[in-house]
Image (cartoon, rainbow, N blue to C red; front, side):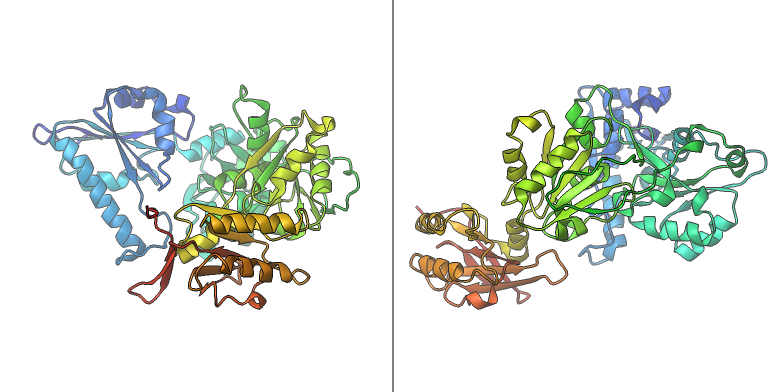
Length: 551
């Protein structure tokens, strides 16, 4: 579409890029992107933009780039107008930024994944600017068309009706609409996935439904929707009910696809791994020229085994990184301490091997043996696997020549010290150290000498494993030592089960800290001579260590 020109201003283009494969960008879109004075694209707060990544090969030197960063991507915000108020302000500010370029005579291309007018962010710019500037919209291949092509299953034929629905509808409403149509595409999955599956079940359509994620990209996955683990579903995915006529005929490459029967969970007890069972799962694609380690970690090349040591973070699922989520989704086997394995939602095609918390070396050897046999193994750790956790254990055991050729990858996680610090303020704002009071793997004399050195150096100290039912004297002795170096009023943060359902954070002082109130689920942060605890205007207390140290 083209509006009438207005003055000598620049032209606004809403350019569809297609579903993800840069080769599905149209010739016209590629030409306009290369010619534009300004290229704008939307992105989440992390700054990465799928749209820009698709268009990267068509950009040229000297172009102005406008990254339109969403201030919020969920319904949670402290904006006085709530989520909608924050988004409305963002769109208004973004439109003003683009209008400044247009008023200066610059042509602006706004990149849009898929089609600009199909659930696209570009529409919000169009509504605010198209009435003032000459505007052209360039259509793109939609994700629905891409998903249909990926599955090899037509959307509709003859007089069949296709309905496109957002997954954000209430499951009951969604079920009614699914029951009343021939074929359907349900967009915006991610957090809505379980509600969508509920609606498909209620409508009697679950067995006909297919799942496609990131269609046409190197991270594409597809398979029967009934077998998808909700924990692995990103926003860029959809549910598809293809043409009933085509389904009845059994057309398409995916007609015979499916998942193998799920192997039962196993409990690791230090014995050799059981023979691997056949397994199915979501089809995962990756660049054929990528290294074997990259292929294994991203879920491609099922013949390549390897171990990924994954940090689950301190507890809350929203602290699990996207990289960790992808590694967990790609794994054939999960290995770890029982409570940590239990934190990972079950996946029907995976085998789970739980053990107690005192067999780290045996657990590592077990995982390496599985990987040597061609399995993709995720060894799970709470927090960060490199901090008092399984990464060191795996690498130590892997020094054995038997496993020297097994690929090993470490995926970091948010560690407990960071989580507790964030709840209290910024106590780790200056130099700090991390110590464990557990003397199971090192003598108490070593711990005591390190505590003495850290205290004398005036470092903030994050204390892991401070006490347990059978180990109380160590914390008492540690506090005696620290009190010899720090003033009584030194701030101390006690975090317990941070990120978990029983989270508590308490701010006290070195003099007032009672060892009887501390257990194995606690982490302590003991301030330096510079650490402050201040009462803010809302009555809360914030603990921070200034970035500058006095001369």
